[in-house]
Length: 148
Image 1 (cartoon, rainbow, N blue to C red):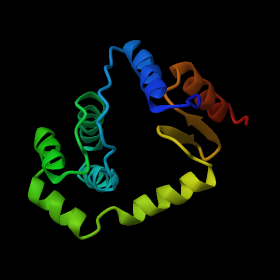
Image 2 (image 1 turned 120 degrees about the vertical axis):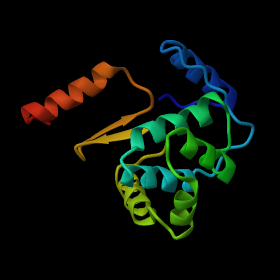
Image 3 (image 1 turned 90 degrees about the vertical axis):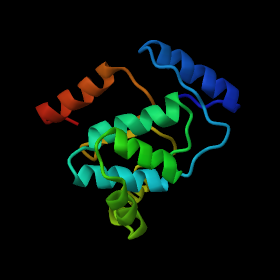
Image 4 (image 1 turned 90 degrees about the horizontal axis):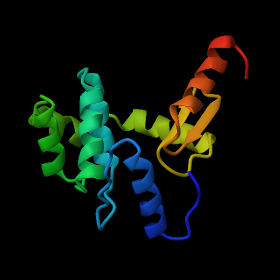
């Protein structure tokens, strides 16, 4: 993703990219602290429903402009995907997912991640920003063929 001199230009760029896929972004006035949401996603992974949780989380933040660090939002998302709220809340408060998040943060630093989304593929390829599927296909094809 290119660097932008201001937030408004970045939002315009993201809107234009999203429009290609019929995605409308709604940016919150304040950025959310996503740590709790990331823990919740790790919990959803442990329950076998990461993808629906992730999709609902993405939609809540980027399409609906909701604060994904808020309990009410996370509990609503959990209910939406069939995840029991009390066990989720108890797990997060007990520190569930902290180790995985710390490991991901270390990996991100090692690869120089400075924006999201950033995809690390096979610990060799870094793909930053919303990119065409062909770029991912190329990286995966190189991995499959054994080249670097």
